[in-house]
Image (tube, rainbow, N blue to C red):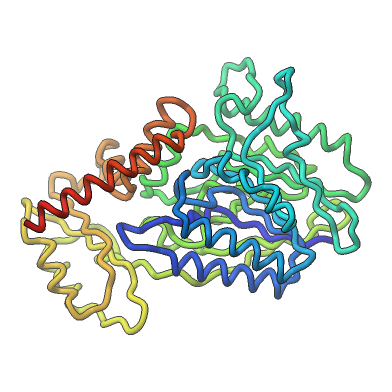
Length: 418
């Protein structure tokens, strides 16, 4: 028997409308370390998007490596399997692999190919052992697949979706030939599966996902004991299949996700099949509050609601304020801040909606505009680059963009301070 935890989409280093989230991420990792200890977990699977950007800060990397060191030191039997997501730099994630392997940690970011151009599936295969030292699981540790990683398939459908499907099909056949009696097959993927659900109005997530095509869940054979997915932030089963799941993000990444339930998935495997699949709820993270709770309302009623908010003792929640306007209000931000003066909230954003935009048939352009407003400039640049070139923005270009953006922010702050 072997007990696994499935998690994904940590996005370490993410800032939320300018607010640092280090404490929130650290709280989740501390909780996760305690669950690993209490539940006597044998294997931890992290299905991509470890970091929020491909060139993470030194502090974010330190948090990541300290976590791995802590849990592997405290749990001598623990094995960790990590795959790169679309937000991660595959090469950067794999770089310290020799050191991580000494801590029973395998990282798969790059899809290697032989001289003949064939995919090296052996490199992506990870054996997970039970407490008796026997190999109980053959793990298909597949990172986010980019153009060129998957087989070229002649199809009238979508080349990406069909190529990814063929990738898993070939990998599955290989491991079926290799596995021994009572060994389970586990698949990992960082992708958008057909039938997966994101928040209806989370246009920021739709924009980040961008043109990525959905992959049918039938890419994962019924003979695979469990499929651990990342990329979608809402924890869920895919197309009703109990053993094909997204773990979801540990904390909400946008206000559209404020009602999500967060946590990890615990899977117990024995004799080649899943005995149990259980959600472990994580209730940490700073709460997100919207005023009003529904659609935007006129400024007077919103300001009244802000005045009536209770004062928060302790950690202040994030707050978004949605106001319906007849015309631009230059002093709007000041009025909102005055109403919140003694309330102890983190004012994350003010969403201004004008009467001409407040329609049920809001056009798609306005929807994407709202999504872009929830994204950082770097996320927008990376998304645009990936849509155009079908590959991640190089680390050098990412670094250059961050330098230019930081310089522009400093210049603006200096001008405003004059």
